[in-house]
Amino acid sequence: MRKSYARNIGIAVVLAACLASGAPGAAAEKINTSYISVSPGSSSVIWVAKDARIFEKYGLDATIIFISGSVRGIQAILAGEIPIGEGGGPGLASAKLAGGDVVAIAGNVNVLPYYLVAQPSIKRPEELRGKIGGNHIAGTTAEFALRVGLKKLGIDPSKDVNLRVIGGTMDRMIALQKGIVNFTVATEPGKAMAEKLGFPTIVDLAAMQIPFPQNGVYTSTRFIREHPDTVRRYMRAYVEAIHFYKTHKEETIKISQKYSRLEDRKAQEETWEWHTKYIPNAPYPPIDGYQLILQDMAEKNPKAAQANAKDYVDLRFVKELEDSGFIKNLYGK
Image 1 (cartoon, one colour):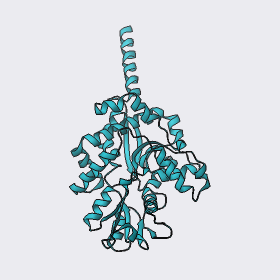
Image 2 (cartoon, one colour):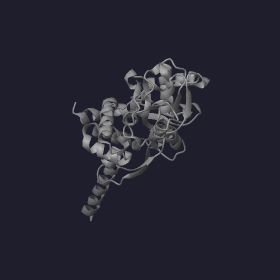
Image 3 (tube, helix red, strand yellow):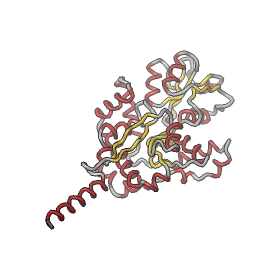
Image 4 (tube, helix red, strand yellow):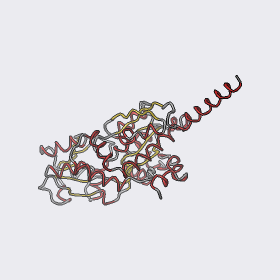
């Protein structure tokens, strides 16, 4: 009887250890997480974490939900509908300045990864003056990118051009094709789509290496405080998914085709190559990128001028993975 009791205690200890570590065979924790774009690219890391069963590896039964646009992604986190998910820097900055409990724990693409594409009659950036530009809704990364990009070119977005709110990438491409707008902004897959339709790239904003939190992982300080282990396991899965994305090209493109519904192999390959180059192995959220956003917002919101960009990020989770050798071991370096 004592042996049976000891054996049962031993089994219980092993099970408890498995549950605590997220090891295979443990009861997976159900969690909702979100991605903000159906275009292949930075959101693909979430798709990979799900379909390559990397979330499962770390004890997470993740349901991935599409929420269109970075602003809505942040709103879902603020509402408590999504405990951890994707969003964009401008949305975070606006929410936090308004008193919202949201913080960046990872940065996926930390430069402004956009291009200005236009109708063939427009040959040079200065010819954008007086033209109609297709924009996304206020607060989105695309909207911010278009305004900042124009400023970098010496063009005042409020005076020198007429910007119209059109919507997401597909909507802007359709507006460009129908002649509703003369130019717009696009990420790598959107650029490939535009060029295929006959609309050339006028300005490569990505080449300017403008620091910017284009896409990242966000959560609330409350969730971090109450569920630190969940956040840590999520970040392990996310960082490993970045490694998978970079080192398993064919599998990644197949997963990307499934979620994006873009079968164009050339566009998928170009997008994969671009993101392989720009997504960091250690995805720290970029403090300098948030500082750029706050500086831009300070023109209309005095609170932004007093804000500290360091309060908008929590670096500890990526730092733990880097300091422990987790990231180094993934890449064999």
